[in-house]
Image (cartoon, rainbow, N blue to C red; front, side, top):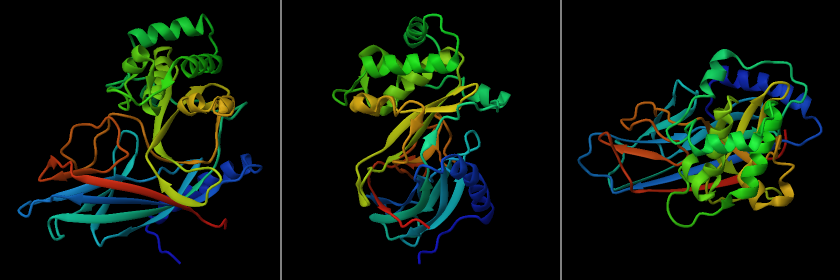
Length: 326
């Protein structure tokens, strides 16, 4: 049996959070997943005084439990958090390894539930949460063309849930999933609004910017897709999605880019998300704990610094395995 490293207090919190999720979603099946995050760092200089790699840690909330992790590669590490959104990272010390190249892997065990908006919810978003999720980001402004488009799209509708649906329908219908050329993949709302193309980061940055411009709290989640109907395999890259807050519904999830790629799933991907993903980080423009880098746009792939400077010789790969239900 694999031994996982996770603080007992965190595990207790995770289990507490899982109870309402399991009760409310008793008719839908969660996925028990093992996710392996592998990194190879090369061209490490022999005379470097310090070398570190940061990788994100899966979130724990009402939709997902991080049940533990184990590291491979014999590295010293610290489990650190940034203070704005509470995202966690493993900061692994490469400085004691033989120089040239270093290989490491972290295996996470995660229980992931489908995510559903809570129709009839009576709870409210607190003032601090509303302030956090209505602020602009470096690539998600509140004004300009995205805001002008949002006003035109909602056309006087005042209900936040209905407004969110109008924004979603417009983006799914008018933005192409297209990773050609340059500029895509940065989560640039202005780019997506102008070019009407991009990947998941661009789709959801446009949605979030437009929602916030209408004073609707909205947030960005970055993670990895896990193929439905498969029990093991490689994962090619990241995926991201969005949520917005509507009174009487709570946080409403959506996946506009997947809806564009798969029109038959458009209805399913507004207000609910299947358990075919693992969430790792939330929010944008956060400072990586202990790093010299300026605040990051987002982080899902490994970040490496050698003597306090970014290091680019990095390879990464990801895989998953479905575990038997407990």
